[in-house]
Amino acid sequence: MKRVFGRTVPLRTGTLLALAGAVMVGGHALAAPPPLSIPVTDENAAPTSEGPFDFLQDWKRNGGLLGDMWGLRTALSKYGISLGIEETSEDLGNVTGGSRTGFAYDGLTQAVLQLNTQRAFGWYGGTFNVSALQIHGQNLSAENLQTLQTASGIESDPATRLWELWYDQKFLDEDRLDIKVGQQSLDQEYMVSSNALSFVNTMFGWPMLPSADLPGGGPAYPLSALGVRAKYRPVDPINILFGVYSGSPTQHSSGDPQLDNPSGTSFPLNRGVLAIAEVQYSYPALGSMVSPGAAEPLARVYRIGAWYDSEDFDDERFDNTGLSLANPTSTGLPRQHRGDFAIYAVADQMVWRSTADPNRSISVFTRVMGTPMADRNLVDFSLNAGVTVKDPLTYRTDDTFGLGLGYTHVSSQASAYDRDVAIETGTFNPPRSSETFVEATYQYQVTPWLQLQPDLQYVFNPGGGVADPSAPNQRIKGELVLGARTNILF
Image (cartoon, rainbow, N blue to C red; front, side, top):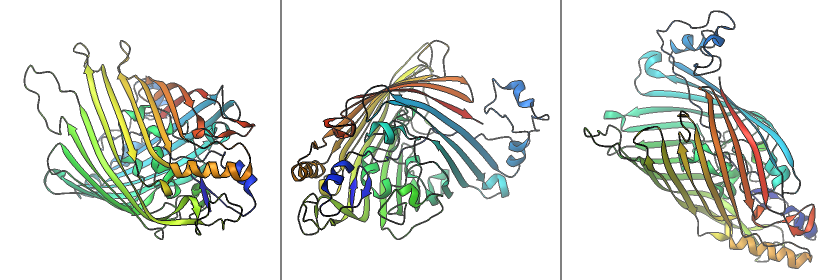
């Protein structure tokens, strides 16, 4: 089997023309959905909704569209339970480039339920979490764009699925240690840039490199994996995270990983081990004080980390006898490599804050990730960077404007394989090199529970420079993607 843009396609001797077409197909990259805040209701509060439409009386100020949900939130809070539900909907489309132009709707409903053990039955420091996803609509990137770095952080195979199921327990004085056990999605804690989460493109969530290289794209939205994570705070500015997880979120190494585990209730432990470690430095640290008359410091968070997966990985170019996989006499069975790893760094830095309006600020972010193992990886380097402006317009304190970019580099072995295919088939099959996109976005907070987000993206060298399926003698042209997202918190 041979992975193509993160997918696995069968290779057979003498089917090189079919293969030349297959390498032009865009794969699914994993993502990260918009962050979901979970309302916490006072367990002693009286229900605020008596009639079926009472929530409409204060709809402009409610934290959620449905307010107290006819008393449900207050009732749940008496047992230490908090419930969050959010609907994200998008209409995105490319007006230039791609294998075709057009718009597509996609949507995601997230539901998260958390139980605080202290509020529930007096056990300090415990949190139980279960979340589910309902994914609907089309996939613009797979159907139109054929990009590596997919346009939306929520687009995926339509499904209703379990996402996370874990228990977290705090230990030591000042809660300096906590342990999380269960089904986890790594994009919720690792490699995160808080400023990057304002954007729509997939790659501002879970990065391109693990999306392309880890089995099944790694345990990230909409997938997850069983594991254990420890988080230790030796001193206030520093957190150390270390986790060990199942090496793959799916049982099988071939096929669409989301279809292999369509409900999220398969918990494979037969696919090796994924280990990841990250060190975080935050300033100002938890509990820091500001001297009287002194300006507040400009906040910053720096992260550095690495991951290792013990799975077997297919060679990007050669079969198990040393022949190119594009050779007509190849066995079609890729050479196997034990293990894969990458290192990364993330920086979030506030660079300016208004003295007249403390809500108004400018921050920059960057995230880089790389691996030297070109023989077993489609992507060997990825980068995201950008700037965000909070409160960009007068009296718009909850709005955010963002300008960002993403870059990914196709490994030398994957590019060499493309050249081999071109030679063996005599067809136009340009070697993939790199892909870059830029994005401009604006989050407009209409009410506390409703957010509108117009978005513009432009992709240079889509797919790393693959041939256009609708015009096989030329590369896919640059893509201008326009659209809007809405977030509704219920």
